Length: 243
Image 1 (cartoon, rainbow, N blue to C red):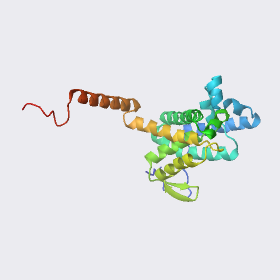
Image 2 (tube, rainbow, N blue to C red):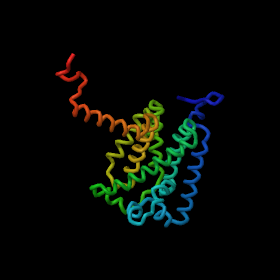
Image 3 (cartoon, one colour):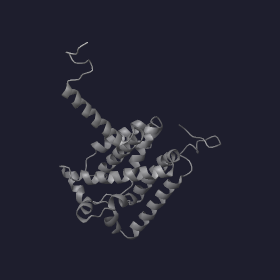
Image 4 (cartoon, rainbow, N blue to C red):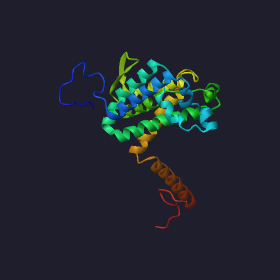
């Protein structure tokens, strides 16, 4: 749903989500700061970027967090931060800063954990990522896209900056591309899929009673089915029931 803030919108006003929000501003500034530092001291990428081997064998547990703030080049950080601004501002206004930061962290870290898990799969290209470095905020950005598509499914988004399609289809296409693009390319598709997956799980858990509630429901349903089978109890009653 479009939001208005006291005056009519124009063609210029319609671009973007409006004034930047606190958390989005902090995220963008932090990414710019880390990018400048990485330009001045390139070895920091090997220390703060995500290398599954280092996380597993050296215990560098900060990497699934810090990799989110590093980028390879100007275009990399430009497109990621543009996406964080365009989709994050409206979500932060809707949720509030605290929940937005929590969601951004969960999807970003979840994407990093997905990269680590994927490096153990029996696929040569994915196994090669075990010793490779992954950097960038795109995992968290894909999480924001998932949330945006859930809240605003029919909001048009420019696909490849050329033609508009509804947000729900935009995210479906991105997910499909992450599956289809050959693993091991310069793009970390496992991080993208992880961001989408953790975003979906978080939102489903938040509005459907939580993941714990879902597990309890499934367990109780399984237990009731066992009891029915044990005591031969069915919805229509036992065949030898006395009336």
